[in-house]
Structures are given as C-alpha cells and as structure tokens.
Length: 194
Image (cartoon, rainbow, N blue to C red; front, side, top):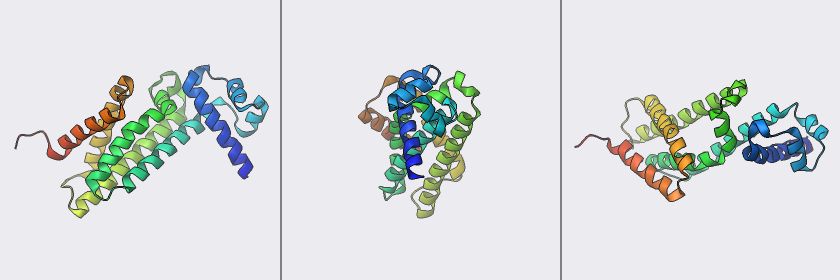
C-alpha cells in the first residue's frame, strides 16, 4: 500500500509540473509518463485518465496551502497577528497554486464538476478558518465584531479581489506585506475619520 501511495504521489508531482507548464488542455498522458520515465500504461494502473490526475493535482495544491496557512497562524499568539499571518501567507501562497488558479479561471476547465466542488470546499474552509480566528479574537477581547461570519466572508472576498492584481503584476513579497499592512490598518481602524 505504501508503494502504491508513493507511486501515486510521484505521478501527481510530475503531472503538477507538466500541467503548470503546458496547461491542462495541452498536457498528454504521454507527457506525464515521459516526465516520470515510465510507460503510459503504468500510469493508467493508478489513475483512470488525465482528468483524474488533474483532480489529484488540484487537491494536493489546496492541501499544501492549507498546511502553510495553519503553520503560519499557529506561530502567532495574538489574533491580530494570526489574521495578518493568514492573509499574508494566503496571498503569497496563491502563486504556488498555479494549476488551481488556472482551473478556477479557465472557461474550458469549468466543465469539470470536480473543479467547482474543490473550489467551493476550499472557499468554505477558508471562511471557516477566518471566522474561527475572529471568534477567538472576540472571545479574548482582541476584536469587537458583531457578526464574525459576515466579517469572515468580507475578508475572504477582499483577498479574492486582490489575487489577480497581485498575481498578474508579480508583486514582490515585501510589496505584498506592505499592501496587507495597509489593508489591515483599514480593517482594524476603519475608514471613518475619528
């Protein structure tokens, strides 16, 4: 069983590189087999088709980002720091999710139901994580939020709104942190003159 899991992981890792380089449509099973140095038939033993491999690639990207996010949040003691760490890690980590990003934005790929399922599940988990940080912050007296659920949706929606500008412009890590700092000030201090 371990050997099978290792082989599946090798296929997914190789396919991830190929898909990110050529895109889903242009990638073939032959390309993946060649990258692995195996015959195409050996890949079919583990995956039924290219679509199934692509699904595994997307799921892996989401898991890797969620792991990074959890580690970043856990390193901080205060909830303001946790929220900031989450947002910065999320915005920086988004670049590593090339296949996921392409799948969500590509009309051709929108025909695959699994993409919408993965995206929806990820969105719900992301809102739940941010809501958890906010609720804990309210509990500890760090935040004063009437509706943490609504605030979590607003924060996640804001992050999504910044994905494309940050991704397309290729902002450096320092730029992302500066942008997040400004957003955090706005989030915590509001926009009304006091």
